[in-house]
Amino acid sequence: MQEQPYMTCDDSDGLHEECGVFGVYDFDGNDVAPTIYYGLLALQHRGQESCGIAVSDTEGPKGKVKVYKGMGLAGEVFTPDVLEELRQGDIGVGHVRYSTAGGSTRENAQPLVLNYIKGTLALAHNGNLVNAPELRRELEYGGAIFQTTIDSEVVAYHIARERVKSGTVEEAVRLAMKKIAGAYSLVVMSPRKLIGARDPFGFKPLCIGKRDNAYILASETCALDTVGAEFVRDVKPGEIVTITKEGIKSDRSLCLAPEKEARCIFEYIYFARPDTRIDGVSVYHARLAAGRFLAEDHPVEADLVVGVPESGNAAAQGYAQESGIPYGTAFVKNSYVGRTFIKPKQKNRESSVQVKLNVLKESVAGKRIVMVDDSIVRGTTCGRIVGMLREAGAKEVHVRISAPPFLYPCYFGTDIPSEDQLIAHGRTTEEICREIGADSLGYLGLERLPQMAEGLPICSACFSGRYPIAPPAEDIRGEYIR
Image (cartoon, rainbow, N blue to C red):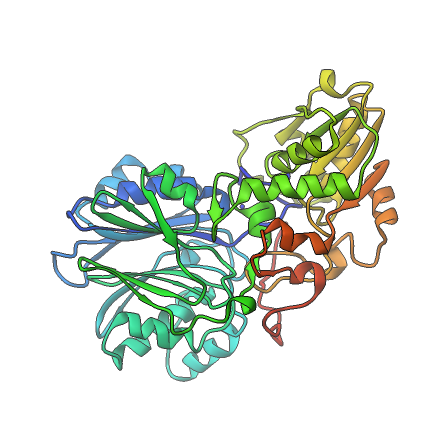
């Protein structure tokens, strides 16, 4: 997502979310770039390949936008000198990115800024469109020249095109939303408005906050906490919110019936920070519940329950609470390891695990261990961690996974690899258990996912193969170099 604050431990075998978005409109005219910067720091776990900030002065020349984008972490890209150059902007949008479609290049960094006949448009997008290739070809045949390889530019172009023939930018967003299909949370900056929109299924989260006389849009509530803003509410699936100095206007004409919504369950399992709430459900409590369900469904006699940092920790606590087995710490994580960009061979992947994690031998030696993690993708990392526990003297290692087995690809912003790279594809649980070297293995049951999300309608297609939208005819997920 790179050092991964909320990952299994090795970015080559963990999963990645696409992006985090953040926008601010300060009605008192204060500079918003510092606030956006701190918001992006709070959303860094959603993507560490690139980041960007675009700001504008609503009282200044209409259409003048300052933008800065770069490769790497927000703390590295936005130096004090860069933030100084972004001053005198009271409205702005920010973005952190991990590429699931389109390459990892500076050209693909967001926000995207378009200059067109009606002025300027800055857009930050989290998600994947399933019909992006068709829409892109349609625009290209109409003479459009693309500067990036990302589907976000398709969204921006459609909004700009609709704006030419509609009365307001929010109406243009609504008309564009009727054409695009897939997963998206959008934050759009026009010269005098900040707009947030969420796809009708609600795949990706988006919320509204307020601090003094400023309104904020953010992917997660933890970003609101970081900048000292109060949570106002979540943007509803299918809703468009328009923030101006007159207040917030809502358009829910594209909202679906609640039972048709399909939030990405992996936000609760893995992607979001545990101190975030999404659509009223605490991510931390969801992970605790997953651990309790694992203890009920896959009990085992053991001496210690441990979590694989970071997203496995809360589920491990839930397992310990339900089972009565003590919860402990088995791993020390090196928080200062950046992404290992050069990993040409599988051996390099596996050695990077020990760079990021080390086992507390005194904690596990001579004990029967329940190791709780959020997922198994290819299995290489999980197998290496099991081996590290055994090398540290663990008598037994029982692996519990707070998600069902991955069996199908995702087209909505999660870079799940092709089926032939998924360890669960074509293997039984017993075979996977042998493959990773564990004494036993238990996955969270598919039927437990709605309970984990407290009854919210969810998308679990990567586990079940039941997609809320028909998958695209061509693979839109891009190529991944691991």
